[in-house]
Length: 262
Figure 1 (cartoon, rainbow, N blue to C red):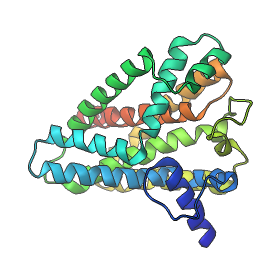
Figure 2 (cartoon, one colour; figure 1 turned 90 degrees about the vertical axis):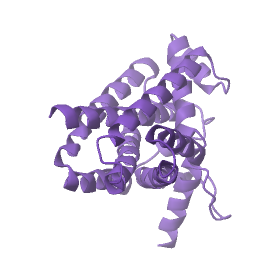
Figure 3 (cartoon, one colour; figure 1 turned 135 degrees about the horizontal axis):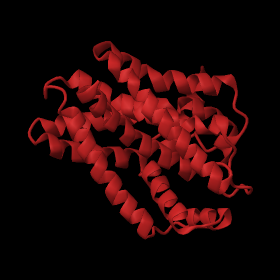
């Protein structure tokens, strides 16, 4: 139990800015095993984001509360996934070879593709999340809460599942994300899917068709992984961050489509 707690806190420290015990570090052994808890981090980030939305929705408009919820999510993770998304936009937008793409993604400076991508990402996320929340009555906070945590957990499951099916692209050990690419056991696979699906499963008790979101989310995941494989022979940590962000947006879009047309 003590070891599992250590693995969990390693995951929490790596993927968020939430304070952890002093003895927790980026030990490669624990970081590798921490992938099993990555979708569970979605529960935590989704909960904090929802609480922000709930508090601000008590005295501000739904749209404004959504903006604060998104800001809270970014602050909680330290823009970890958004940074990966921006790097992928810059790398694949400006590079035409594997080597060039990887060099651009490693550069800490944000370029035009990354800046434009982030602006569009936040605009789309704001609009889709606002419309998704409007599907429920404003006082039905249980469903809204399940929407938040299921979107965060499913999108993280889609992202982390890439490491189970594809190879890490960088040959060197310069990236701090490299340890998560090594030697995964059935515990990491089972843990990821368990924590990734549970919130959506609970959501489906209220709205059974919500389970259908897995189809477009994992279709998106498939084509993203295929695209990364084509250009850089695998994935990087930035690719996983971009996948999480894109699949979160696809989740909200799918909820809206399913609710209105199916």
